[in-house]
Length: 402
Image (cartoon, rainbow, N blue to C red):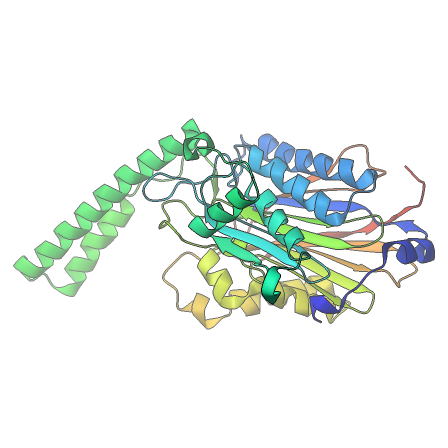
């Protein structure tokens, strides 16, 4: 079940199967998507599908499709990736991104602040893993911060000013959060001083803290709370698979924080077993995702069974929510997973598309060559924080069919 074991030969696969496996699957993050903004989120995913499918229809690789879809999402200010990302605690944008192929190769960048499309820089690293370096040096697969910036300069990768990645909306939201954070810190300090000076009983101190929490501003009905990763999984006409993630990370994060979008096995993972391939891309509370290696565990469960929906459910409820690190956490715990499984040896020639999340909502879209428009899904969790699951089986198109 190691991604390195899968070596697909495009022409042989095409000739044997007689199918065009081309398909693209996109998600724009798990969190809370407001009802008024739902059409914009759906369209962001649909646009990303169209961008990827334009390449796939013209013989592009799965990796090309992933890069195009992620770039489309990064350019859309409604997503938390690239332009319009959440701001760090000192008001700047820092992004993470990764792309992985079913060959096992990957490229990723973390905490980068000078690029409109961090996914394109991740693609550059991925492509360069195939190029040998002098003195038998090993090409990097993950670069962060200043190291990533130097690498980009060396390869003439385009840079932008950080301010060009900040929208008026994200700056206004950061300003509000900054004020709220200052007020909360002042009230907590006042409660601590009162406890020390007045020697308040523990129950009274707790009541003071609870009062602060009760007075905290609530999320406006029209405002989204999408705090993490967008992702894409592509299958090209020959059945090769690639997946990727991109994110601006959590709002008010520390500078230099690396999230799951940059971490292979955490935000994105692909594995092969024989002619079966499973890919997953995840969104949620990044630090908990990193501790649980949720993407790789999901793929391992799904590739080992024919009941993929049950495998996904167990991964969310046991590997993530049931893990000790999540159970003992004082932070909000959330995860959303989008996964795809294909079996090229099956005569049915179907791609299984699955998703699950514990958040209020998760927005996705998918497209195949014979579809006129992408199909979008806004999955809303009516029993939050219980697991919300869904999926469908998609028929691969026949060669030459439109």
